[in-house]
Image (cartoon, rainbow, N blue to C red; front, side, top):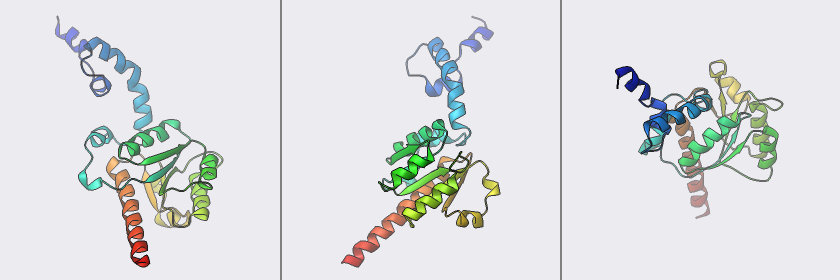
Amino acid sequence: MSSAAATKRKPSSASRLVGAPGRHPEAEDRRSLELELPLRLSIEPLVSSQTISQTAQPSETEAVDDLRIVVVDDEPRQTEMLREILGSDGHEVFAFNDARRAIDWLKQESCDLIMTDLGMPDINGWMVAKEAKALYPDLPIAVVTGWGSQVNEQQLRDGQADFLLSKPFELRELREVVAKVAAQRQKTTTSDVSGRG
């Protein structure tokens, strides 16, 4: 077999990541052709290239109590990706592609954190934050945007948001937000218990 043919048959890096162990190289090549494009479309706009390795090897310092997290984004790929990442960390995730449905859900249910995209039609992330804070004034809210450099701290406060995640962000940044929320919840719970004692 020529070197050119060997190169052609060698699985790509994408196939090594998503292909099932023990498959024939040609089968893995075909699978990578089918999956490589949608994976890049769903991951790269939101999370950096370190996502896959960090998902496989989370830091022990990032381990936190399980949270109920609401994710709001009009792009299904984004909500599904965050659902998988946060769910793999042990959190209960409620994903919505319609901001109005998320707000209606909040009127009946509670959560520990909201992560909402800013640029959505009809109801944007600032409006989600405002509606959520009206229901739960102490509820932490993280806004996610590709225009993070244009959002300053004053705008964040005026928009009633507590955290800003600029796309593409690393999993470390995502987990830092979750860890801060978990730590604050634990602190509040401890204070409540001490007060009752």
